[in-house]
Image (tube, rainbow, N blue to C red; front, top):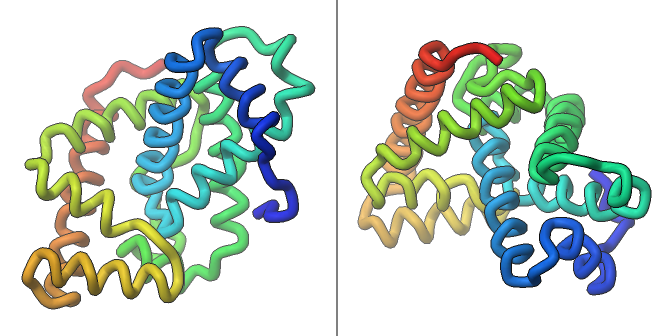
Length: 197
């Protein structure tokens, strides 16, 4: 991912102006888009969902000079299109074994949310959001907390989460795996029931 380009306060202000004229509304839209991106990447089995969401936002921010005037429609859809490209890069750079260990599915197996068109990404997200809303609050929190951080920080975070729940790390892994499988099935069922775009 592109680590060389850093977002300045001026860049961030320009992004907020593009999202909405009112700063408070823009901040709210920004947060909703970031949460959706994290959920999309999480749904796709990405261990670094928050980093990928930030990378997506950084890329959109870097392109604002080129697209702000000419882009029409909901800016969120542009973010989802960029997220698709970021996800594909992530898959190309990630060794299949690491993908298997993080996602709990076979290498090369079908992702829970296959990348397709922007409207399908939105439909997938809507299904994921519905399925997340059906989870009890403690399970929803566990899913969101479990997939944070990376490398050593991820290990430490998961130990801390297991301690908070009063369970062993292995029991936490099993619980997270079952919740992920439940969400994947729920999203798949939702997509099959939804009319095609």
